[in-house]
Amino acid sequence: MTSVIHDLGYQRYTGPRLGRGYAFRTLYVHSLRTAFGLGRGIKAKIFSWSIISFILLAGLIVTVIAAQTGQSVTTSPMFLDNMTILSVLLLAGIAPELTSRDQQTRALSLYFARPLRRTDYALARLGGLVTALFLVLAAPVTLMFVGAALSTKKGADGITHAAGDWAAGLAHGATHAIVLSSISVLIASLIRRRAIAAAAIVAVFLVTTPAVAFTEALNASQGTSELVAMTNPPAALNYLGIWLYADDPTRYTGGDPIAHGPLLAVYFVVLSAACIALLVARYRKVPA
Image (tube, one colour):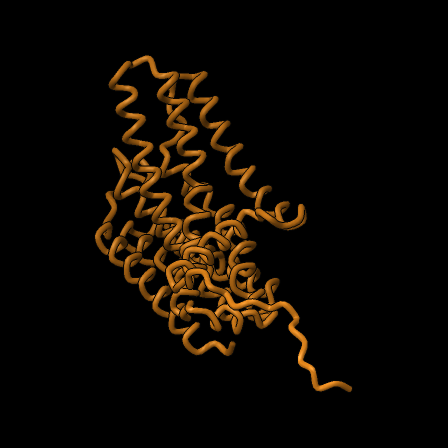
């Protein structure tokens, strides 16, 4: 035993103190990297990149067919509506990784020990997921635009038309990303086990699909079909895309015009805002 206190070499940190904004940006970038499996092993990349590859391959096929035939196979918004199932599967794989893992490993206490606030944590995770899905959806839309612009035989008018379709696709992709990600990350935040969270996300998006299909099969009025579709966000997004971007909406609705276009727009604004508010409220109370 000795009473001498030895100097172990620890030094005080004299550099700048990184604040709340830096912590938010770091968590946002980390969320984005996690969504694509960057910085992780090959197993973490397989599922996400398999889904992304299917979406890109579909975009490439549409681009090649349009270039070879000179005819537009589909519009960019309609293409994204057809990719909704793949988007849901992608979100079911990513959202639990962003939220459930931190609760399961009790890492939240480490995040909240820093200047980062609980609201910042929720919004950074959501922002990373929204950005990731938007990038995934924007990639094939951009590919279709480049293919259409290079293969058009109508000169400047063809390029202008392709640019308009591209802009509509990006706008619709952003709507998809915000709506679907808000719902997915909220569900994932409520469930600790990732597998159960993933199954819950898929179930929420698909459980009302038969009701929508049954309503359409009964040849119900267009307005009734749209109201029933509001129980299924992917189906309602399809109607919103037709209302906003289709040159001839009746072509996609069996001859009837969209009956509740403004209501669909308000519905998605309210739905997204409610999901974000509930997500923030969830992390204000979640045990760290």
